[in-house]
Length: 376
Image 1 (cartoon, one colour):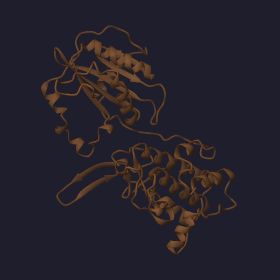
Image 2 (cartoon, helix red, strand yellow):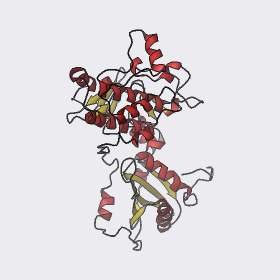
Image 3 (cartoon, rainbow, N blue to C red):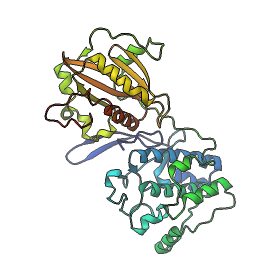
Image 4 (cartoon, helix red, strand yellow):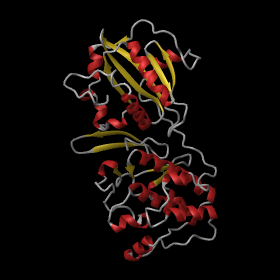
């Protein structure tokens, strides 16, 4: 859950532990379960069901982009906040991409029988994303119909119905809804519609509103904002002035991972929102080389002295990616370059940095005993 910060997923704020217990601090969601609304009021109007389904798919797509597969999506695990927005909860059966076997599939049979995909029951391995989408299809059916598509008191008979996709859409389903549900509840995962295809479906897109992210900047960027606050030009070409800000020994040591407690629950480098590398090149050359490498990637550049703000005008999963960069002087011939995600998606930031780093191999300082072919 540390990997997922989405407006339609219950937020994990903190994890604390004692010798006997682990305490998990979660967002307080006080609107109840979506299941209770359907159980009390029956089926929803199509536009209301579509809105909930849009929020569900957006959140599931985001989870999958982080390599997280829920594996127990059902109405009871969909909560509503005070404003009526959907929140996915209960990741107790979830899996991450590291759990995928050599065949590229997950193999643990889990989930709630009425919502589980047929390939999960078959016990031959399954794609976590496609299995989650099947469950989303069952949820959409229930929202529109008021009852489950697959029901039977006998578990063997229930699984037979699921494996054969033996269900019938009620007469009040619109043609668009019926077509989408049929494509999702395809018992053959190789021909089942995918989440990216659902996002393009005409029925799904009706009245669609993208998720409104409210992600606060993880790093302090006050100094960057101050540097560019009075800049009206997108590209500043003025000459560098003076020397980069100095970094003392304590600041340098404090960057050591062993002293950073944030890494205790967030150890995977690909989810970091900032990164650094050292260089023996002159600071002006470092800034210029970063600019040369970023421009072909479509980034607009603002720079002032030894600070740089890079913005991708093309919106990504969480809006426009903004990267703040600054060069610090550790010694006259050694500099530390810091890149922070100011806005946008964390994985997009990491992908950008991986691409950028291939262009900066000769800028990065590598110790004699390190492999010079490695990326920074």
